[in-house]
Structure formats: C-alpha cells, structure tokens
Length: 63
Image 1 (cartoon, rainbow, N blue to C red):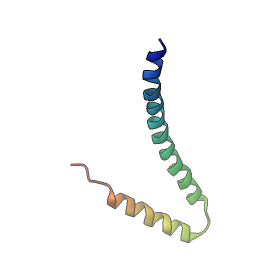
Image 2: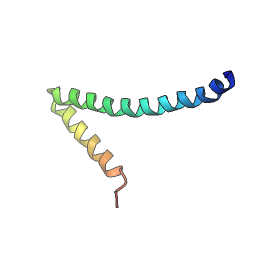
Image 3: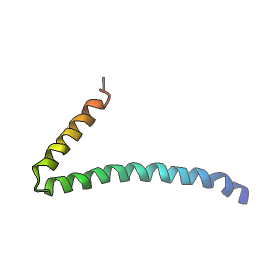
C-alpha cells in the first residue's frame, strides 16, 4: 500500500498547486484594484488605466 501512496502523492501535490495559484492570482488583482480605487492620487489611477489597457491589448482575441 505504501507504493500506491508514493505514486499518487506527487500528483496530488501538483494538482493542489495548480489550482491554488490560479485562484490566488485572480484574487490578488482584485485586492490591488480595490487599493487603487481607494487611492486619492490621480497619478495612481492613470498608471492603473495604462496597465489595464496594455494587458487587454496583449491578450489574444477569441474568434
């Protein structure tokens, strides 16, 4: 039974890493967005809009 555990243990760790990093990335951007919204400086808002525009331009279009 130990060989079965040694076979599936690395796959289980990989599965959890893949799914946890995807969720954390999305949440991190949302938290950053909330911080930018609450910032009183207009420079920060301008930089955020440049960042959003540059990321949306580099995304592949869906056809």
